[in-house]
Length: 540
Image (cartoon, rainbow, N blue to C red):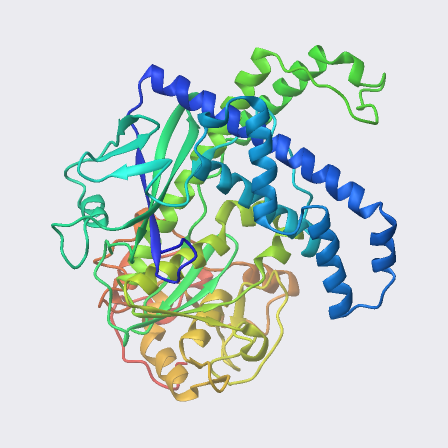
C-alpha cells in the first residue's frame, strides 16, 4: 500500500533516547541531506533558467492558451529533465554519486527529498507560489522521512525502538500513558501492533538543546480522549481571531479565549534591540552612515552572542506556540464531549492575516483550531458543519424581530428588536448559527424565540444580555461607550467539563462561573432580589 492511499491515518510523536555517538551520526546525515538538497535545487534552477531563455520556450509562450500549448510545455520540460519527480530523483542520485558518499543516506530518504523539491518547483511554476529556497547552515533540515516502514527509518514494535542505519534508538514511552498504548495497538486485536505507514525523524531546539523525535504515521483514526456527546446535542460557534463564542442548545453560553498568553513585550523588544546592536557591531560595512542597510546582497557575520540571543528569542516563540496548541486541545476536548453537532461560521482567515489582523491571527490561530476541531470530531463520530455567512448573515440577523441590520465593527452589543435589551454581538451570531438550517439558508424563528425566553433570566445574570432602560435618552457618547462593551472572554482554566455545556443548563452560568463585570447601571432590575422569575413575553 502506498502513502497516497485513502485510508485515514494519524501521527504519533515520541521522543527518542539518543547517546552522543547517535547525535553525531544524526547531525552528519542531516547536514549531508541538506547539501544534497541544495545541490539538486541548484541544478534544477539552472536547467529552468536555460529552458526559459531558449527560443523554443519563447515561441510556445506566444501560442494561444489551450491543450496544444500545454502539451508543448510538457514536451520542453521533459526535454530539459524537469517534467516529473523521477527526473529530480535522477539529479539527486548523480550528486550523491559524485560526492562519494552515496551509501551514507538511504535511497528512500533521498527520494522523499527529491519529491518535496519537485512539489515546491511545480507550486512555483503553476500555482504562483514562491521560488524554492536553499537551506542555509543555520536554518538546516529539520526532518528526514522514508517512503515505507521497510527501509531507512524503521519502527520496531517489539523493541519499541527505531532502527536507523544499523542501530536501534529507544523511544521514551510512559507505561501509564493509555493514549500511546492504544495508538500503537491494533484496534481490532489489541495484542497485535497497528500498521505503521512510514516514520520521520524530527529534530527540535528546546531550551538550547537539540531533541530528536520520531513521528509514526499510523493507519486508522486516533483514540479519543473524551466520550463524545450524542448528535442531538448541538453547539453554535462564532469564531473570532482570539476567541470562540459558544452557545449550547441547553442555553449555556461562553466566550473562550483560545490564544496563548501574550509574551513579555518588554523582554522581546530587549532581545531584538540587543540582536540589532550585535549585528551592527560585527557588520559595520553593511550599513550606511545614517544607520540604514546598504542596498544589494551582503554577507552577514553572526557572533556567538547574537546566536545565543536568537536562540533565546526562538525558544520564547516556541513556548508560546506549544502553549497555544495545548489550549486548543483542551477546548476541543470539552466541545466534542459537550455536543455531537457543531456549527461553525466559515471565514477567510488568510485574508484577515494579510490585512491588519496579522498578529491577532498569529496569536489565536483560529484556522488551526477549526481544522483540529473538525478532525477530532470526525474521529470521534461527531459532526462539524461549516456555515457560509454570506447568505445567512448571522452577525446581522436579529433573532427577535427576524430583520437584518449591519453593525459597525466596534459595536459589540446589539439591540433585541424594539426592546431595551442588548445582547452580545458574538453570542447573537452563535445563537443564529445554532438555529440555522444550512440546506435552506433560513432560521427557525420559533426556536430562536423559545431560546430567548427560556434563557433570558440567566443571560441577564451573566451579563450576556444587558438592559439599558434609558437607551433613548442617553447621550451619543454614553451609548457608544455602552455598545463597545461586550461579554468578556474566559480562559480554558475556568472551564470544567462537568460544569460547562455537559448536560447543565444556563443555571451554571448564573451562579458566577462565567460572569463579566458590568456597571451598576447596566445590571438588570429582574436580578436585584436574587429570586428566579419565569420569563414572559412582556419582559423580553
